[in-house]
Length: 143
Image (cartoon, rainbow, N blue to C red; front, side):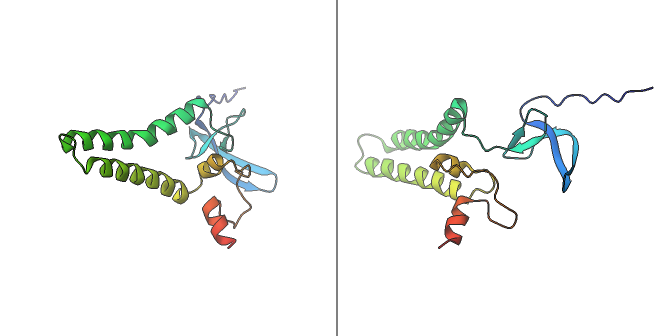
């Protein structure tokens, strides 16, 4: 008698994705990388991320938001020479550009629910089928 031993999926983002669901019957695929915006649960099935980010997640997001701004400011200083009168205006413009890029990215991003987490909205779980799953789209649709 042979026993089919399934190797455990390793890591937080490697699990089995849901292929088919019909009532109470669920069919899962092989171990693989979870889709974007998902991580594994205790049974190693891929589930959408709905919890608040941890400390290291916030540090990573902060770093990625600050990196373009710091690079903008560095090159403004590098090429502006001595005390240029337009340097302050360029610094303010770079701050505005990076801030708007971050906000627009969060508003246009689909299925990650980061905007819901950043705004403190607790309904980050996926909505019923047929409804938009982006906070921006839900608010625009209710106007």
